[in-house]
Length: 181
Image (cartoon, rainbow, N blue to C red; front, side, top):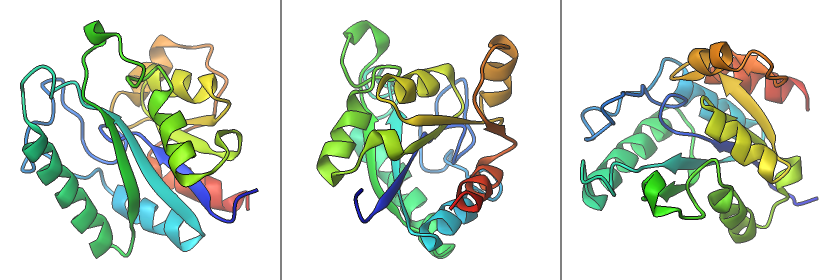
């Protein structure tokens, strides 16, 4: 087993508030209550946090990579203010029609980060709010966890047969993870 433990997180709806109209600027990027503290809590228990996010707004022309970088700079800064750190951010810039291998539910980004950081996906949690997050995790043997923030409650309602652990928010999820150590 690798010395470092990793937790994979979806971004929109898990760390920050999501929008059906896309998060298009750093101003629109607003953290969900206690999500930044949750990342710091995971860090303090030896977990490295990596964000895996679909950002089709790029392909759709809603924002450019400079704007996406500004959103991520804001996220890094705000997490740091709470004493936490995001190790890396992997994003898919494509839209569904592009048939890429990186857009969740395809597991391309999960495979890429596990190769880059040399850890086993089968020993890793992937926390998301959508069925595509769950499917991406399951495709590579990672353990999916669902939060009810973002689209999470809708995901539970629409998929009553899900047999995975779910939590009110990222902080509750983080507490569950560290309680299992």
